[in-house]
Image 1 (cartoon, rainbow, N blue to C red):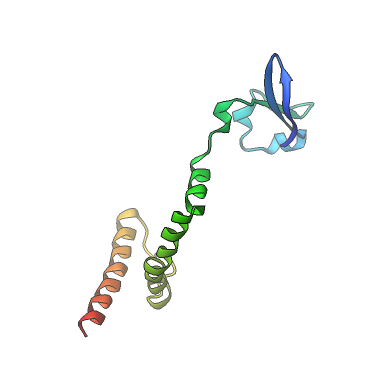
Image 2: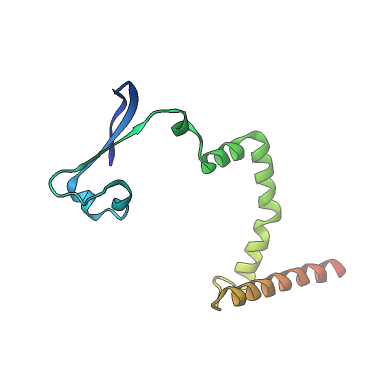
Length: 128
């Protein structure tokens, strides 16, 4: 669907209107959420109110703002020095590109074994 009008006024309310083609509506997997009946002759138009509830930020947008702040950039840059090398060591040096077992319990056990080997190597390096 595409936006066919911003800030349209109807019944003393402001709306944003979206339109879609008939052929697109027939194959849309989310059709049941916005239509009571499947489209037969025409496409689809949907209007959303422009009110305060529509202007709230999603959690993803809030996280983007947080990471893009100066404090967020400092904290995120620390991750590159302490977290990323661990995953790089486990995937490249240990050869764990994918998990070979199935099931939550087995996968957790396999991941914990790789982490155990990583931590044992760190201990061994610090002792010598």
